[in-house]
Amino acid sequence: MRKGVFITIEGGEGAGKSTLIELLSNKMLQRGKSVITTREPGGIPIAEKIRAVILDRQHVTMDGRTEALLYAAARRQHLVEKVLPALEEGKIVICDRFVDSSLAYQGHARGLGMEEVWAINQFAIQDLMPDLTLYMDVSPEVGLSRIAQAAEREINRLDLEKHSFHEKVREGYLMLLQQYPERITLINAEQSPKLVFHDVLTAIDERFAGFFATDVKL
Ligand code: TYD
Image (cartoon, rainbow, N blue to C red; front, side, top):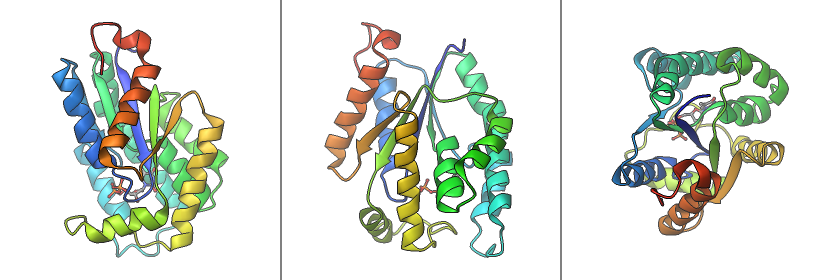
């Protein structure tokens, strides 16, 4: 059994994942936990290069299956090089996106099929699933308007998809929630940042009551 804890943060565009991850890791560090934060696609040089290929706005001819395979390739390398070693060292790994993103975006929204996308991802992850996934739920209207207002955020190829694509992404996540109720917790990300953070800490407390034991109350 691995010694660390693997937490993934999921959600559509503008769900506030980055802000949450920063708050969460700071909170854990304050509590004396050993924690690393990372992201997909990317997190290490090889995967960052794959990320640049996937998200390049000029790559308008990219085939959906190619896209799914590239995400899975980046995921594999990131897992082997960064996530697994950290988990073996007993760290808490907080990762911005993981396999659920591929299932919701490529499997459901792109229409490749969740089962097929799951199959190629199994090859990449070999059953290594998160201990907890926080799904930050936000409507595309709210999420996309947040992105439009955040001047510093770069608009990538997937941001440019039609509104209906983002609706489908959300639908995909809600299907995953039904499928994995033990692993995935829905967080209402349309609330104020304070309430979002409160709900996240509550979810972590509930999920890891045994793991963090009495010395750490998040
Ligand atoms: P990013 O700029 O990191 O977006 P966000 O801040 O929303 O996470 O770009 C990642 C994009 O890649 C995002 O649009 C979601 C998409 N994506 C997939 O389609 N499939 C995947 O497996 C992953 C990891 C990301």
